[in-house]
Image (cartoon, rainbow, N blue to C red; front, side, top):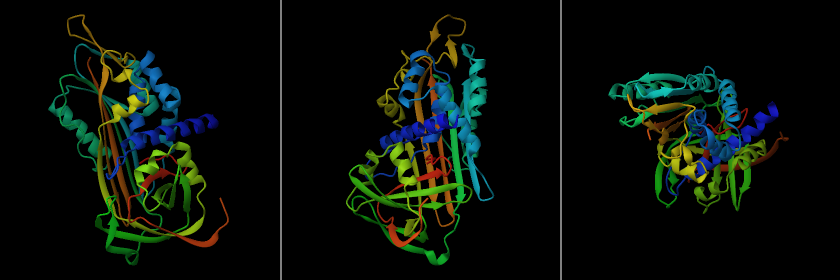
Amino acid sequence: SLEKMKDTSNKVKNVSMELFKESVSEGKNSMISPVSILMAMAMAENGAAAGSRTQIEKAFECTTEELSDWLKNWMTSLKTGENTRMNVANSFWFRDAEGLKVKENYLKTIKACLDAQAYKAPFDAGTRDTINNWCNENTYGMIKKVIDEISPDDMAIIVNATAFEGAWLVPYEEYQVEEGESFYTEDGSEEKADMLYSEEGFYIERRIGDNKVTGFKKSYKDGYSFVALLPEEGTAAADCVKDLDGSTFSTLIENGRYEKVKTALPEFTSEYTVDNLINTFEKMGIKDIFSPDMADLSDMATAAEPGGDAAYNLYISKILHKTFIEVNRRGTRAAAVTEMVAGCTSMPRQEKIHSVRLDRPFIYAIIDDVTTTPIF
């Protein structure tokens, strides 16, 4: 039902903010794609049984089916247009090994729920190159490589790729671009940046915990928006993020005001790799799936020594998440790849004009306008 989907949507946003909080450290750039991470996690969750599955359901506060249904509906609702490319792709790669038996039902489920393609492969250098090529294609060339090598213990690899390319609804004209302006980093040092100036019609002003933020929403074509939040002078962006959760984020956008706001946005490109996701999930109470002794991925596959009867236990041995973003005068390109390895063992307009100048560390998100889910 619609009510249930809305409820799951709120839970997705809460998990999204948890994941974002954990990725943020002071003085460093950070970007994650929560939906990319959740797609990969849902593929693993559909293969988990018993306590391994229950822990994930408890941490996310929804059942495996609810999360998979929400993700499926979200994927089908995504809009594209002449000026917008949005791609979400899932794949499951498993080793062509005599002792590994992948459950037919698992492959059917991830295809039906998450449109995941499954590939049986030798897990050699050629497979590594094929997976990297798959990531490159599915991120429009933004993330070319996700795997350096495949280890002999790797039995299965789950990959999600999420990519967005969008043009601004109102692109910046030449006169709105000022080159070589100043951006001040958290330690006070100055960097040169090309600043984009515009007047937007959606102003945000709110307290997040003890801190006040101001910001704006700027539309892309075809149903996506860029949201920027600027902490008060003297407040670190990381401190604001600590108090951000799913409902605070939704409220920020829902309670924005249709008022004029003069904005300055720097052009920037950023790449980021998150390698502490297992740690983050463990803090959220998801532990068994990452333990060689405790993991139960029996709904995905069973593994035994070829010709012998020694059973190996499958567990998630690593999660890698890579992101890329480029914001410029024409629009935005952003991409993310999440790789998991299973190893063995509206208000009236007012004429008040606000101003938000992003010349110091700020928080940003790319959202889809229908569900306000942060894609990046």
